[in-house]
Length: 97
View 1 (cartoon, helix red, strand yellow):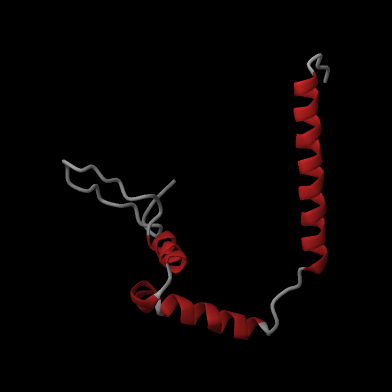
View 2: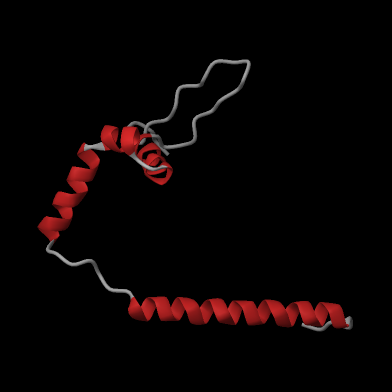
């Protein structure tokens, strides 16, 4: 790429430095990442326990857990308009894409 303005060149160099820093950070994260402990059965049991208690998560959970529950239940965002009724939401089990 060629640029004649010093400001543009400086912006390119800053963006490249930021991308290199992100790359180094992600490479470091990949080196130190390890799989969760436990056997397949233990992991499956935790998953099934999580899925069986979605109502408890909704009632007592944090906002991030509520978002996970909504993503599990609905395929898309729920369409909403202030002066109209709600549309029927698409459910993941019944939606065909």
